[in-house]
Length: 172
Image (cartoon, rainbow, N blue to C red; front, side, top):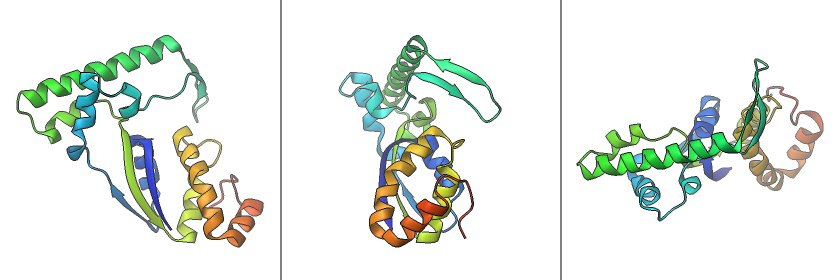
């Protein structure tokens, strides 16, 4: 199965790539997408069209730390992304290469990639990244993959849903 994944933060692609047993990736390079950052700096694109920030709400991590991501904090983060985009623009105007300037922007720029996997590898990925304590964004990506998996191999998907889905077991 070949999936075109988009609009997810860079950290999600890295999370998925980390457990790539049998999965192949072709990832969009920031070297060729700097115009999106320049569009944020100039006001042609909204910050959140290019950078990802988590939704407002209450969160906890695997160590039990609990916190709230407030509207005020989120606005500060949006402002920081805009300021970083403007700093990127300044460096580009000063002649910096995209490879150098991209190191100055927030990490979770929205990323696009193509991912291909066989059935076993995709089940392994779902096992690891659709469990309750997985990264929120990876869980959301798995939700988006699931209907395509069901359409691709309906009998296996039915078995998987009954026996393994979100149970954090590793695929056979």
